[in-house]
Structure formats: C-alpha cells, structure tokens
Amino acid sequence: MHRHALVSRSAFYCFLLLLLALLMPAAQERQETTPPPAPSAADEALRKAAGAPVDPKTYLIGAEDVLQIKVWREADLSGPVGVRPDGKITLPLIGDVQAGGLTPEKLAAVITEGFSKFVTSPEVMVQVASVNSKKYFMSGEVQRPGSYPLVVPTTVLEAISIAGGLRDYAKAKDILIIRAPKRFKFNYRDVIKGKNLSQDILLENGDHIFVP
Image 1 (cartoon, rainbow, N blue to C red):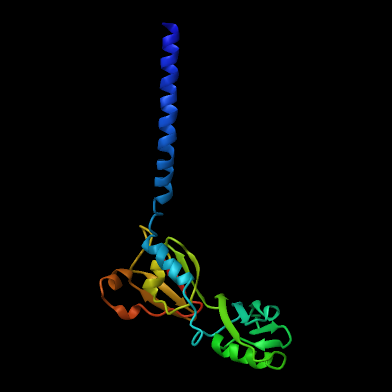
Image 2: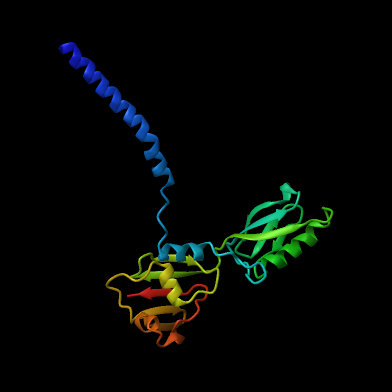
C-alpha cells in the first residue's frame, strides 16, 4: 500500500513537471509579443522637438553646434566637429573654416571647394548632429523645467506642451516670456480657448518662459 502511494505521488509530480514544461514557452511568447506602452503626448512632443530634423537649406549654424562632416570615400576627412565660439571649425588639410552663420548646404559647398585642391571631385555632406547654439528655457511650474533646443519654429503653447504641461497650482494666466530687455505676458487659459491668439508668439533664441 505504501509503495503504491509512492508510485502515485511520483506520477503526479511527473505530470506537474510536464505541464509546466508545456506552459512556460507559451508564457514567454506572450511576454515577448506584448507591445510596449504607447508614448504619452508630452513625450512625443519632446521627442519631436529634441530630434527635429535640421533643414540644411535654412538652418544657420551657430557656436557650440556639433556638425557631422561626411566626405564620400574619404574616411580620414570625415567625422564630427564642434563649432568654436568664434564660429569656425578646423578640418584636415584645409584648416580653419567659417561655419557660423552658414547653412549646412552652404558650408558643404565651401568645404567642397577647399578639399578640391587635395581630392579629386570631393563629395561633401554636412549634417547638424547636435543643436547647441539655439535654445530656450522653461522654469517655474512646468513638469519638466530646463533648456530645450530651438530647432524648428516653436510657439509658447508648443513649448509648454513639450515641457510636459503646467503643474496643478501654476498661475496659468500670468505666464511671462522674458526676451531681454522685453517682457511678454501669456494667458494660457485664453489661448487654449482660442482667445487672444496673438500672444502665442514664436520663440527666439535665448527666450525664457517663466510659469509662476
């Protein structure tokens, strides 16, 4: 009788192990195929602002921007380069080149002309890897205060959205845009209702939005 009980118990344990072996792959498959959570509207706005593509025809390069120089089939002449405070960059063979105030497309033409003295028919492309010369600042009662790159035209309302929106106790009617020496008032409540939209101005480099 005792031996029969041991056999039955062993068979039961074997059945459990077999069942677990069958269920574990299915559970892992469900876990792997579970889609990641969708980003929030604020996170999507931040992603678009921070990673907005720079228009090579219109964007003006400034000090502290990081550029990516690509010369086709010339790896030694390609690579990242930072724009110095004087607006210049230093490149192999041709030395200092004025980059500040030029568009990436115009700078590529200047570099192409310089490299053409040393390389046969160089093909040059200039990309802005990091925008550091143009930014605005958010402070006070916003979810994510700090500095933000000003890559594309951005209004005050868009900037507030990118910063995650207002906090619960923000004085939404008394927001201030500081553009030394000027000051602009912004009534968030009015703008989201479609009133006084002229106060939703485009930001400029160095603007500071303060939410009391």
